[in-house]
Length: 283
Image (cartoon, rainbow, N blue to C red):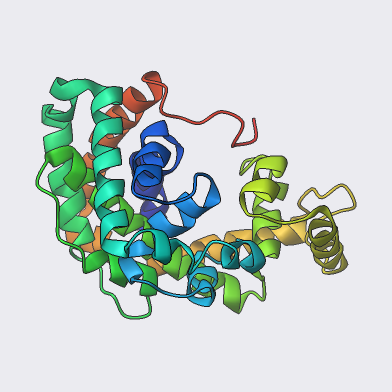
């Protein structure tokens, strides 16, 4: 099995996972239990499976977010709502969002049922060693509804790959902000302003990091990726794929191909329902 299949499978499941970030139900449900609307919701919701951890742990596992901004919200969030309450509210919000996007019947469709089973099999094949954020999610109980099983499995697989990707970034000598900028510089990642604002970086911090990347020959003066930058990114993505291939090997070539096929159908339905955020990714 070619390791690149791990990247393809991840891209198919990503739209399912990110329902927990961009749909209005998430902020509404989490604000209702006491969290402050805005970035606190994101930090606390994603970190809650790790327990009432401090800002340093969140910054380390999220990697490309400004630690100063995280520290303004964590650990304060845990004085407003417990991690267990945050986990429950987030799952309820995802439930409501997916039902709104796909409808009750859509959430019980044959495609959702099949995809949830395939994704769960893959997720349960992941191992926690060296994967702190994945390990925290893996300790959670599985939900019962098929569309929530699918979301949880997609989240597990996403954080499993993400933990491995951070390892590749560390080995490449790319701090969080630099990694974010190199991603943006491709013109196929986050929109620059969204990346800067959502990750909490100031203009001065952004410029200083860009200058450091340019000095390494990874981006040019207009913050566009160079050949050296593309080579480094290619090497990092290949390393990430190798580190993420285990669940797909266990699932097998035939079932992984089927997951990609059915996942594409579900992804397209979410897209047609307006699930994709606007102004986030470069066009």
